[in-house]
Length: 553
Image (tube, rainbow, N blue to C red; front, side, top):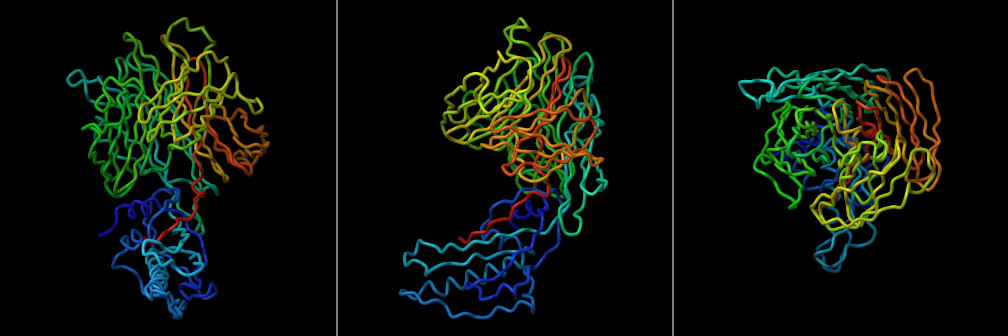
């Protein structure tokens, strides 16, 4: 039987690379080794994972091709061991690893084993493989149109499209992405989200960037939303939304692949972690979008955080957040996934557009939502103003996190400007910042997610919208120079101070190439006016993928 995890990895079409096979274990010299390549199934490029040799073998059981005549395996005498048991096993591991690599169609490097295996039966030799699968197409899935409920007087629960999403996209080498549209069975006459695809060029993954935006001005829904089109994933964390009175938030699941996905939504709330009935066993058919009301998952939760896991195929998860106060719409946003939990998260490009105390209400204009999902933790929150050198704006705050229970931290009191929020914790955490322009008619809000580190050149698409800006944030101890190149080839070098951030204006509807410094940066696109507050982190480029490491069991 095919391992579904292996199917998912093949579906996301990770990039290829050449490596040398051979060492004393297999008896194949580096010069004689030939890397076998297999067919590409297709799907979005994704970051490499870690699999065991057993899993890898199961993925192609019964389908391993015959060994190439150009790469004969010369037998090597088995190392002698006092017990007489482990020498042949060492040789067997090397041979099996070579066969598995050939059956997977990947280039591998077998790392040599030093010394004899220990006599203890429970110990294993340190045999590893670094494998780069063949290059596949790059695929980006967008959030799709803004949705509205309650517009059908005969059935208030029916969803309908409220506004289309305007897209900006671009690919390396000037390749024009192919576009398809997913079906939206949960939306009456729904247009569905757009999927963009570009093939590899000369055996290498092609970088692709896309983003979308939408504006709504209606009696039941108003505001501005912007989000990046991203790769589907097997695990996503949504840090946004509310299921209290006035909120009408929707969880949106999109499957751009050819295999149905089984999705589980775990809710972290005031009482801890739970998998509600509405979040268990959700089937997202191939080529479709599913929509689940947040109230069906976490009714009454003020600060929910969602962990979305998929089996069989990856999905693109997002959340549409909207708010109505006493029949007056108070903003909306389309929120993508935040960074997976880690001991340090960085949230760049957080705008403050309301002066302290200007709103004259008890509502908090800017707040940080945090979660330590697996263990209690102490988290130190540092807020750095744009353009400042290393150091906090005010004193860093240290807060105690209880495992599995979200915490909201008030960040009001900040002057108008753009900030980067850095959280360092004693256990893995994830989080996001909510920023609002006000609390009355015509106001808007946005969620600003933790960004992944960009360590290699990447493209960023700037969705259409008012006065977009790009924030570059560094946690390095050294000053970095980041290159920003427009589509017409004009390059600007941006100096990012150590431990600081810099915000520069960018052009709406344009695509740029970011070349980070040696230590990597985080980046985000931000929109911040009185009636339009939104932003999204810049994802790492499609070509920035590392090898899969395979360990024998």
